[in-house]
Image 1: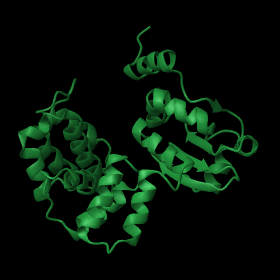
Image 2: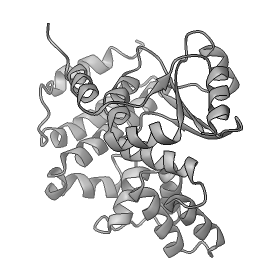
Image 3: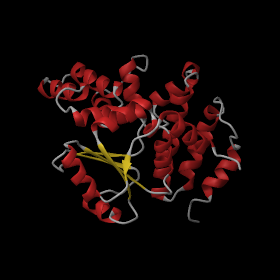
Length: 282
C-alpha cells in the first residue's frame, strides 16, 4: 500500500513523539471536565475532509513542545463540526471555516478564537497567551503599544513581537503599518515581515523587488509562500468577478518566477491555465 507524504508524516510523528490528548465527547462535557480540572479548554473544530486540519494533526499536534505544554495545561477536545453537537457549536460561535480553534477559560468563557491551520510555534504561543495572559511577550507588547504614542517605532516594535511569536494578530497590525508607511525597506527584517503579511498585489513595486531578487529564491519556503499568496489573492479576485483573464494575466507574469523554485511535478503554464479556466463559468 502506498502511503501519501502526509500520512507518512502522521505515522512517524505519532509513534515518535506522542500527541495532544484529546477528548472526543461534546463541548458541554469538555467544559465540565475543564471546570473540574481548573484548567482552560482547547477545542479543535475540524472536518474529516479538511486538508489543513489533517496537516495540523500530523505536525503541530504531535510537536513535542506543543504536546507537553497542552497536555499539562489544558483539557483538549476534538470536535467534528459536522457531527453530533458540532453544527450547534458552529452556529453558536460563528464558525465558518475549518479548522477553527477555540479557547475557553476554566469558567467556560470563550477567551480566544483562531481560524486556520497553525504551525507548532503559533500553537504554542497562543496556548501560553491563554494560560498566562498577563506575562507572555505578546500581552506585554500589547500593553506597551496601547500606552505608547503610536509612533512608527512603537508600531514597528509591536509588529516585531507579533512576528517573532507568529501571532494571529500579525496580519492586522502589519496591514496597519503598511497603510501608514508603504515605502517598506525589504532589507529591514521587521518591514520584510510586514511585506510578507500585508502586500498581496503581485503588481506592486515591492512585489517586483522581492520577486526579482535572486537572493530571496534561496529561502524556498518564503519565496514559494509569497507566490502562493499572489495566486490565492488573484484567484479570489478573479472568481468574484468571474473573469478568467485576471487570473490568466497573473499566471503569465508569475510563472517564470515559480520555475526558479524546486517544485516537484510542476505542470506547464499551459496545463495550469487550462485547469484554472475550468473553474470559471463560461
